[in-house]
Image (cartoon, rainbow, N blue to C red):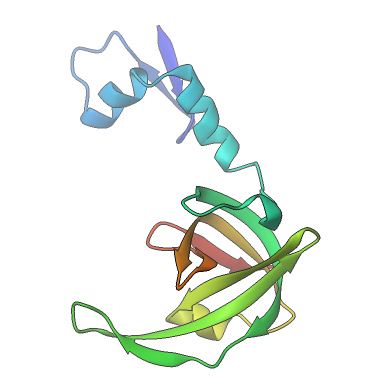
Amino acid sequence: MVVIDLMTNQKQFSNRKTFNSVDYVWERVSFYHRLRVCLRYVYKVKISDIKEGDNEINIEAEVMEKSYAREVRSKYGRVLMVADATLKDETGKITMTLWNEQVKQVMVGDKVKIENGYAKSFRNILQLSTGKYGKLTVI
């Protein structure tokens, strides 16, 4: 039997005697999960649909406002740059947290694309962030 790995588009032969851990896990993942993994790279949500705790958020929006950058110290002692930007699409607005190089990358009026973002509440305000695994691109 041949299994096509949807993440790398490589053929994998399940009659092999040895598997690395990725092959072993991937062949046992349900069809639903494989479909969800593929769709998360295609499906874009609207700002009005975002709720606290959502992850794997893909969105395109325009930057309406950007706060001044400020320095904060992480719990590990590193000094980080942080700023807030207000994003807007046709359904609403949301605050996005920009970290380090993202602060310089984004300007007011830019259209941005966020891939694999997540939503959280900070001081009772819903915020969007890319985190460690997300990606921010200026279109």
